[in-house]
Amino acid sequence: MAVQLIADIRDYPWRSLFAGILPVHFQPKTTQIVPSASIAGNALTVVIAIMTFLACLTAGAVYMVNQSAEAWVKDISSEITIELDPVNTADIEKKMTLVSLFLAKQAGITHVKPMTAEDSAKLLEPWLGHSDALSALPIPRLIAVEIDRSNPPDIKAISEALSQNFEGVTLDDHRRWRAEIRTLTRSAALGGIAVLVLVAAATVAVIVSATRSAMASNREIIEVLHFVGANERFISREFERHFVGLGVRAGLVGAVSAGLVFLLLPFVIHVVGGGPVTATEMSRLVGTGELDLKGYLLCALVVFVVACLCMITSRVGVIRVLKSYA
Amino acid sequence: MIRFENVGLRYGNGPEILRDVSFHVLPGSFHFLTGPSGAGKTTLLRLLFMSLRPTRGLSFVFGENVSDLSAAGRAELRRRIGIVFQDFRLLDHLTTWENVALPLRVMGKEESDYREDVTDLLRWVGLGDRIDAYPEILSGGEKQRAAIARAVIGRPELLLADEPTGNVDPMIADRLLRLFVELNRLGTSVIIATHDYGLMDQLDAPRLVLYEGHLEVR
Image (cartoon, rainbow over all chains, first blue to last red):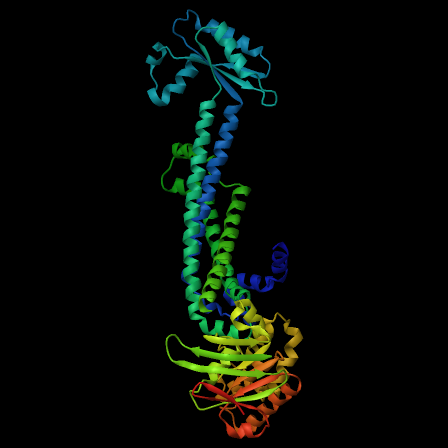
């Protein structure tokens, strides 16, 4: 099996395959036993380009959401928050100082930042608005604690020590948030995979149909190839060469279009009237809103997968039809 | 090389076109296949070429039972056979040269290895000035010669020809017959289906005569 596969790869007509990737007008005429004009060209190219465009948009968006979530998780993993309940506490400021001093002594904690009552009130402003009434409310006080990621503290021990030494003090290590972010990214990834599977299925269906049509319109050529001793593999290669070329060309158009969308997205949001708030919300969801090099490589991978789908589908399609002729 | 035993063939549920056909073709032999129109000559050639399978009986080509062969196995054997069809079967989008070179391309040979051979053969069959012409502008006789050149370019072990001189003038017909004889002298077995008695009379070769589906060797 492995030996056969190696022999197949060695004997594969790579030169003619690469010639097939060139635009039709630049392909050497003598290599075409099955003429390009006989393969459903423009409509199929447009459909595959659209499919690749959608696949690249999906893959790129999922990648950006994932990157943004990763960065967010990384940020909140470096911090824990201590919450002090102001109810039944005579001197909350003193308690803040004592808790801060206690925390600063713990191993693995690099920075302790007690937040003022105004800081806590500001956190509620998006929901309650700016009002002097906030100062009358028993708003919990917070202490932001940065931890050493290379030498993390024993969070559980600190939490227990806080509970034992101070009443109404709780520690939040953001585990629930991290779990929710991970659920969000997993959901986004699953949704993306579902879209990619649908796009792949649609691409396969289109190529199967195009292969059947190409074989029907080239039946005479197939018969002649049989007469001169061509086997199924030779005939299928003659067809798949066209489909791979078409897939790569259409895939590149789709991927470049998707890349342009990612590049121009901030500009488009600005043009359609999005202000700083929209930009902020976007950046919360998808980070900077731009693809990095890995993201663009992902789009290139989509083109490669589309080309492989074209190759495998057309080959299987041709061989199936040839078997039905026999 | 070829052995048919009680071979019968029918299309679908129709009557048998060939009945109890039995004959042997030895390596290096030369046969004419003849009979009236509709007697089944083309069908028998297609059986020999394995593009049809017998509905009964046994057929062996190059020692292989055709009924047991896979599609790949049949393709492998077809490379050892050259065939000339009555309707030429040239590919309209390829030049005469490319049509003739097609079997060598299928065999995976490099163009540089056969460029001269194809050109020489085309000159020999009188198509030296039609090398770059497309089939649609060739006359019937020219197409026939191109089809014959395509069938013989790979030096087949067996050559099957269906009315190969039907569309050419007597001078070219003589020339083509000489080509077949020359190939035969080099070891190729030749079976020519024809009802041109003038052609058959030029050679002292056994005749496979088909009549109403039965075959008789004379």
